[in-house]
Image 1 (cartoon, rainbow, N blue to C red):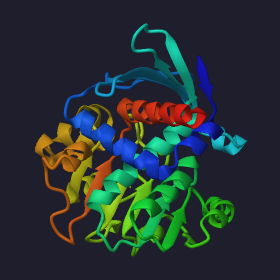
Image 2 (image 1 turned 120 degrees about the vertical axis):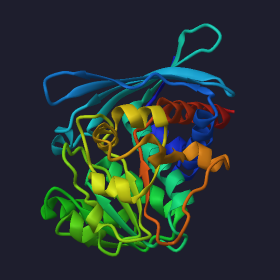
Image 3 (image 1 turned 30 degrees about the horizontal axis):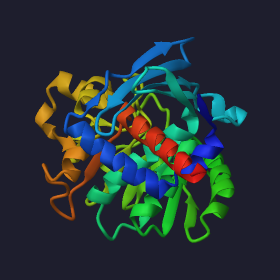
Image 4 (image 1 turned 60 degrees about the horizontal axis):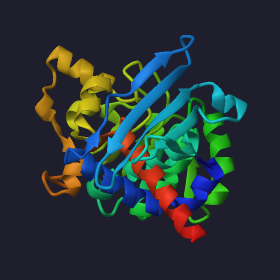
Length: 319
């Protein structure tokens, strides 16, 4: 069995490669070439959780399961909040074929999916990026956004201004061509921004629709289970809404669940999946003033496709 560390994954799967890989996977999802039971979440102690994400992709065939611990307190210990393993099985025998670090894989594929959405939804001239959150996904999303737009300025907001300042001090040297701004709070960060990425573990909204100006594109990423929520219903309703996988959005995005239950929204408000957009089946941004929203839940197909690509590149390198 092959065991691949996080450092090896990062070396084998650059962000540009991951974006293309995730894009192909999302088309497969929208075309029905994926078997993806909804993510299962097991509570551990009221704060920490274990996530279980099985799935299978066809053409090319790959199947496996991601087991990942969700520990929100880990960043304070210098660790990722998402720790676990992605297991890939042999298609012919069912034996375990590879085990990949799920921390690195999740960070890369999640940001790559946001970049794939941004590439087809954000205005072409978008240059100012606001990032709400200061964890691993914040850094990954900066790396991903500069792959698809000519970003010149990054505004960062965290739970406190000090956290944002610490993040910028650590990350800014890795992106010498970018101007970083430490914002007092999320509202300040998004003023004048062209692209906004929320990458928090918040249980209550950190981004209000009233703060978002016409023409902005938002990637709402951090709330992957119904007990979490990063955006308010105002943003949901004022936006052209796109998702990675409709079934996940309807079952696991709290603001969508609540809006449907209250009758404020119907299912037709979801314009479609990113895979449908890439396949040319639906229309993306309809005007320069339209607010677009990519509601990311994260799906197993993204992990499977990226894991398979890592294994392919590793084999090619070993020649």
